[in-house]
Length: 325
Image (cartoon, rainbow, N blue to C red; front, side, top):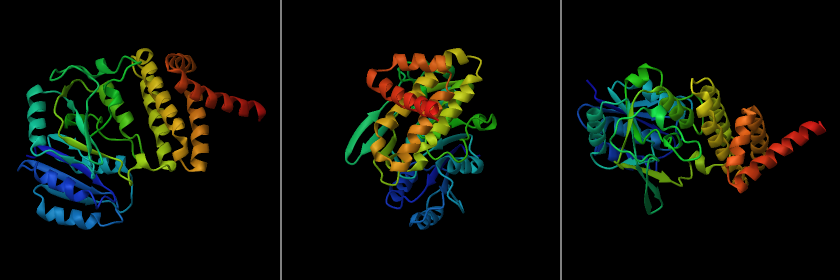
């Protein structure tokens, strides 16, 4: 039986894919499989993956005939995975040798639904450790209990799918798939759902994933309309959290986080194409209008002046435009 399935989407990363694949080889084991999902790459990535299918132990190559984005590619990997445990890696990142064996041993010892891990952020030659924003390590907890408080960074604000490992029962319960077609922020509804609905998790002090920042082909570096999918992603977070049995307690956190992300994008609006910038403003105003207004007011009152003022300006402009119409 396959013990671990690792899902690795690739799209136009021919420069970085060899490093990723070498690190997978340094983690290979007879009971591990690596699901290599080619999301219809248009550079030399497919040829690299075809070679890997022959040369990398446990490799399973799957190719999309149409580009679907990261969420869809990860779902393809989940649908093809057979392992008792699952993990994710992006096609431009890499791993420390033997990392997955350590992570697997830890989650099996703890017996929980999923574990979250620290990671190493790599920007050019600089390296820094980014930690899960939760202090208690190697202790099994209810993931619902660590969503709050609303005014501090918590585990739901650390959404990286590749920073952890997950038991197959989460797939069987419908908790591990991503929202089809989301081009960015696909991991936000996903991490919130995990924390609301899974039964157990733990945070580990391992840091064996090397996350490459500043890649020119990454959507986080591209200011086109696909970036605006964060609004659809957070709308989903708000909608699902509003139906939760603890909605009154959890919605302030969800709304405040949504507002913080909107403010972040508005504060960097110059990197967007002009028509996308206009759309960002209008969609942000519409999103704030959809939020529970009493919760929104409390969220804005709790934020620092600069971020709150930026959001209120967009909200006022929208209200003024409606009056003028």
